[in-house]
Image (cartoon, rainbow, N blue to C red; front, side):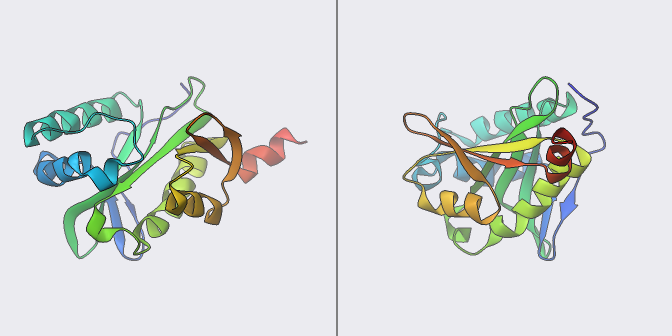
Amino acid sequence: MSNINFNPFPQLTTSHLILRQLFLKDANEVFLLRSDKQVNKYLDRPIANSVDDARKFINNINNGINRNEFIYWAIAFKTHSKLIGSICLWNISENGTKSELGLELLPDYQGKGIIQGALPEVIRYGFEEMELHSIEGEVDPKNVKSIKLMEKNGFISKNKLMNTLIYSLQNPSKSNHQNR
């Protein structure tokens, strides 16, 4: 991989949100995220069966971050550090030029502009700090809210697989260099 280094952990902030490291104290909320049928409706992953599953997930996430394999932020309000969702850049290509975007939010917080508030800062981090050339997102064609979110943030539909739309956002500073 390129010069990607997530140590120290890159905490990000927006006007209302803090994107911070995941901690074991987040296990209950992580369990809710990973076991909720509404959150998992469009995700292809095993459902968490216990808070212990969530603790194992948190440890795996933090170990992966320490190995610079991916970056995963807990989303919380600045006024309260309780996890309400997560956003990550993962599946980073071997040469470090491309990453996949992942995001999820507890049902009580969906549809309130929270991900829209966090996503531009994550994109900025991916392009400016990680020096990614592109960020991709896989979206279920039935997930209209995620499709609108991608398009609102400049992602372009690039490919369609059987049950997945692939959206891509190019780093403007990298694409300009490539076109010269």
